[in-house]
Image (tube, rainbow, N blue to C red; front, side, top):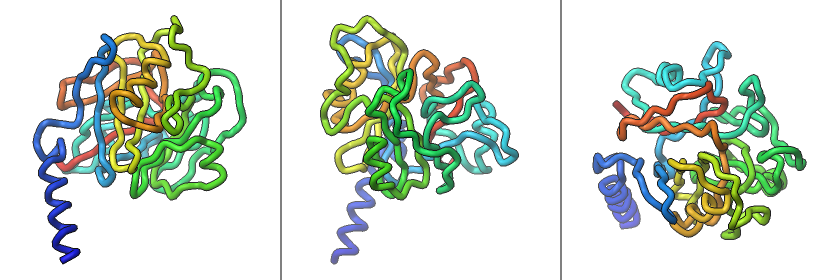
Length: 245
């Protein structure tokens, strides 16, 4: 009986999932008169992080990214997934296919990354956004992980340094995760937005108690299903969803 119930639940989840329904996981929405594009993923979806190809060369562009896919795979969506040095190496923790490529950074520092608290986006059996020092104290089993900063939402609270009336407006992107770790929302603003409003999008509109900033100004989204392929300088870490072709 238990197995039957579980199988029925799995079938129901498949039937109502955005990919199975053909609706695609990315949608446009407006929050407080600001347009955003949000792509939704669920635990168990084929989410990956990329940086280098098999030869050690930076992937960096949508064209190079699609070259990394195996025959029979297609890219559902992708976006930049964390801050990087001028050579495109990640500033903090980066894990791909279970292998740590760069180490966690917990100290404060200049720029948005060092505006503590910052955090780690973890792709494992569940999806998680974890404050970096909490991650250091209790490392998670992440098949993929990317550290960035600042945290946008921490346990339902906005980052303490965000100002409601800030005039620092940029195109921004980031990720938030549902309380049960079953859903992640990857959002990019389609007009310049403050940190405060971007964080409230995740908490108040999407219902994410924890959310992490990826970047601003250089933020990019590739989503073939909605005909979107942002151009710009080569990216460092990239997060994306893959599905059977």
